Image (cartoon, rainbow, N blue to C red; front, top):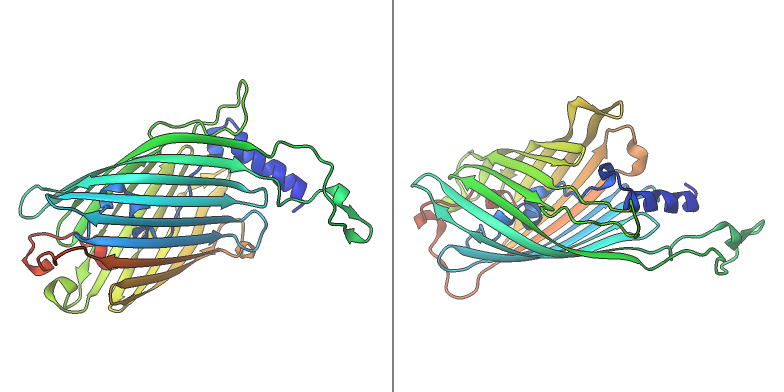
Length: 341
């Protein structure tokens, strides 16, 4: 794609006052990015975790998306949990990027001997900017090729906007079943990079509903054995005019975790095209306190496989500070979500 046209296209994405353009990044390994998914998941493993997530979407074309997230959480005394997450997203050759820092808090309520509810909240600060430094223009070429000289094009390279926002979430769980929901961008902050009348570009609220059911196939980690389970899961997201569903399952044969998902809503069309996006395959490995994951999105949409799909990797380290907490088999309820990452 011509890089000048690409720059204009990315600028339209950044500055259009049509909400349809504004979307948050996504992770296929959504339960390996728990703080990004739902602030109520902060500290849910009853100890501490630190994790890193990386996603490279459409690597075979110039208009690719790279997302990096680093996070940590810890469960405190008296059912309190805290977390912090840093997320950076870079879109295309034009250098449209955003960096956000979020602080999270969650509280655990035992409703009865079967069910627990955890509400959670996040406050975040985001910086968003556009940089044309990586682009080349026509006056930098002649019939011999690229000259390497500076362009004479004049453009504003200091486009930047900063904003605060909040997110709220909650999750209900029993020993094997969980269902949660979250809403991000509650303030719908203006993310426009240009000033002036009609330049407003509010970031729409992002809603998500997610859940799953763990089917034990033998011993479990909570009983002191290696995990053997089959876990169907789903994650539905809606933002502005877009909505999407991830539907699939994990098969855990510790230390190996295998997963397969479909992303899309086949009964719905978007601008006349079927809403089929990708098939996702996942391979995970548990080694001591570390969990490693790799997934690949095979594009099945109209964009085709020439985009390169999407590669995603995650690393999670589980830790504790101070004396060990009571083992899981003497605690009344523990959410099954941690068993799958």
